[in-house]
Image: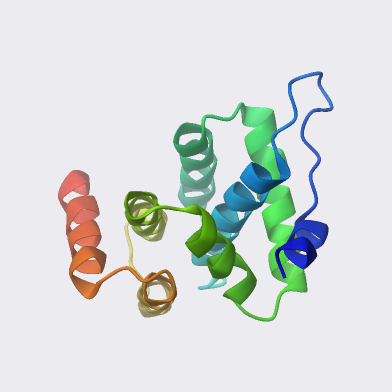
Length: 153
């Protein structure tokens, strides 16, 4: 299963001479970014603020250059187009992320949902579903949402 995920997601980093990210790390990051891309795409309205927030979060959370972040986002978009569900992404995250990393990811999803200063019901539904698939408690799901809302105020 993980091998199929790796084949689907691929690995294109290292072209600039940097040390190659391991397949495992690449799969982990790509799965997380795919979920981030899904949150900004789910309402069929990708606002400039959401796209800018996505780039910023990918660079900051995963310590990537702008070019590598953009490449990862493009790969995540392609992987989502080939996917029929979230399982391949959430299963990779469940294998590779610890609880705190999952909480940080859910917080990032909320930041993306609020980036356009409007939370759509479908965005909230998707984040709730992803939190459940990632085994994040409802308490932590709500706490991350409240943290993001408080940061925006």
